[in-house]
Image (cartoon, rainbow, N blue to C red; front, side, top):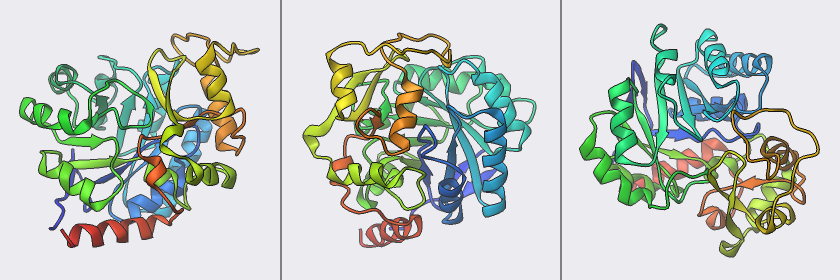
Length: 313
C-alpha cells in the first residue's frame, strides 16, 4: 500500500504522519525538524515555554528543515492567545490546540491564513470546528497520552466524524506501527498523529532516565489521573502519580499558568521534572500502548520501519 499525502491548508506532507506535540519540552526543534525532514509534520510543544524560548525553537527548527513545522499548545494555558500570536509572527505553518476548546482561537489565524487545528473527541466538536473555520482536526481517542476528552477508542470515533465533516481528519491515539496507520486511514482518516513512538526517539528532548523509564513500563503501569486542567490524563505510574491518585498534592508555589486550575498538583513543574529525568517526583504522560515500545530509535529509523510495514501490507 502507498500512503496518501496529507494536505492542511496550502501545506502538503509527503507522509501523512503528524508528530504529537509533547510538553514540557519533549517536542522541541530537534524532534520537530527531524520529523519534517522525513516528510511528516513536526510539532513544537509550546506549553510551558516563554515567548522568547518559543521564538528560538521555531527559528532553530527552520534552520534545520524546509519541511512543515507547527506548534501544539494547551487551550487551558493562561497565555494561550499570546503564544499563538507569537508563533504566527514567527511564520509557523500550523497551530494544533488541545486540552480544551476555544471558539475564539479560529480568529487568531484568520488574518495570516495560519491553519488552526483543534484536537476534538466528538462529532459535535468536529462539526463546530468546521463551522468556525478550522483547517483540519485531530480526532483523539482514549488511547492517547496526556489530557483526554473521551473514553471512546479512536477507531470508533473516526468513521462517524469522517461522515460528519469534510475537513482533513487526523487520527490520534494508540498508533505505533505501519498497520495502525493503514487501519486508521482505511477508516477515513487523512493522517495519523503519533506521540509515544516519537517520545521514545533519540531526537526527543527527554532525559535518558525518562526514556529508560518508558522502556521499563508495563501495561499495568499505565494509569489515568485527574489533571489540574480539569480533564483526566493518561500517565505512567510513578511515585508521584501514585500520590496524586490518593489525593491532592497542593503546590507550594503557583505560577498561575492555567486559566483555571484545580490546584491538586502543579502540572507544569511535575512535567518539567519528568522531562529532566526525575521520574520519582515527575509526571510522565504517555499513550495507552507505550509498554509495547521496546527500543529508542532515531526518527529516520522510525519512518523507515513505518514505510517497510506499510509496504508489506
